[in-house]
Image 1 (cartoon, rainbow, N blue to C red):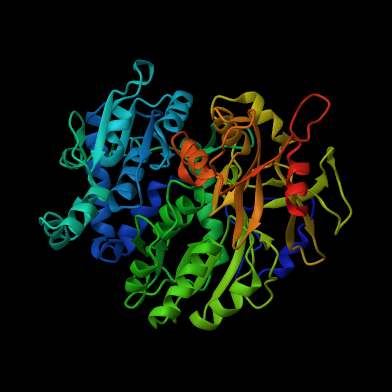
Image 2 (cartoon, rainbow, N blue to C red):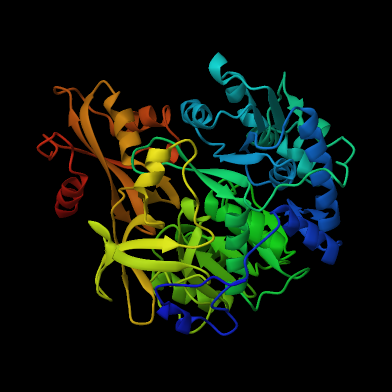
Length: 562
């Protein structure tokens, strides 16, 4: 079955050879991705974590055992289950084990502060959490109204090869420090090993349906208040299928390698690593954090067929490879997202790798990928590419989203497609605001050229994108205003190499001595470190509207002019 489109889609004429205009309607559930790969390629490597390899047969069996263990803890169909994990083998198994029960995965950033985690837990109300051992204490200390029925602690070192586990236990300061960064002793929680010690679920145990909710993916939006985008199995299956269709020259099975250098708690990493890679029966190489040296060590033996990244990661990897004299040849498709990709990076990257580096675009609400440049010679640097197969887009008047603007004129990007979510968890009013007659309003101002390529020219939403992560200015401003020396603050994104940096314009309370480093540390005690301003500018007053709202656009213009 194919989807009928109205209006027409001129961009399909620019698709690379082999990319279809339409896709068949998806069915089944995300579990089929692992099951089908395990059936067709049972002995192919599925996961590689610090050199330890798990086959697709082993992965499928581990999911069934972990699902049985979670059921014993009381997890049932429709229950939200929080995952607070870095990239590790246990993350993949936990993700699919939760889905196996028909429960809902809620991904969380393990670097979040207790305050940030509490806000999200109070929104989704999960009673079960699978957490990195370094975060377990934070979750155990939640207030009574957020107390959990079960906390499952994951020691990520148990997913490493045995020799590395032994080495980390040796009494040397450097090794003790490394072990302390990876794991902590936990009391009063269920161990992940206990969860995986159960007999597999019966083969006839019920499975989720295509339209069941699979994931609640949080996006801060512009207010800093947590909003969970509700993504179904259909949404995520469709986006994985779209990514497969976009890369027809990538083979399934052993020999195809995907690097998970992006965090899988982020929508971008989730789709290209947790779903796309599994659908390809690819070797998914897991990195708990981006370390260029660690990536290069793997590249020597298993260069990436597909490398999802953000420009700063590609830039650092390229620079380090040149410093160490390590060849990146054989790296196939680099997919860049979250921020603008500069042609000054594309040219040396492609010369070094012999592959391609293409820019894409997406949002958490869209599972997340909406548009990507063709993996072909007709791609256009500086654009976000073309809408994926099965995706409809319009460029509309932001003040009247029912009216399209003339071709080539700037307007708000509106989208429809099987990957587009149905709404925010428990927030019908917020959901209503982002839809117009069935079209999702992205909040981004774009232009579409005669070939269907899209270029982002402005952002209605005032999110700051730094290092590939979203920062809501309001959230940072609230934290700054709690500082005793700051009377008022406006936070904006300012250009920096590879993206944006968080900059705060602050009005001081009286004339105290102001220490920017101390203020930055103050914010880091409230929010995740990447949200803390990189730079402070002291001003006498902030421009405000007649109703007293700080006009961030004017603040940014003033800072750019200064």
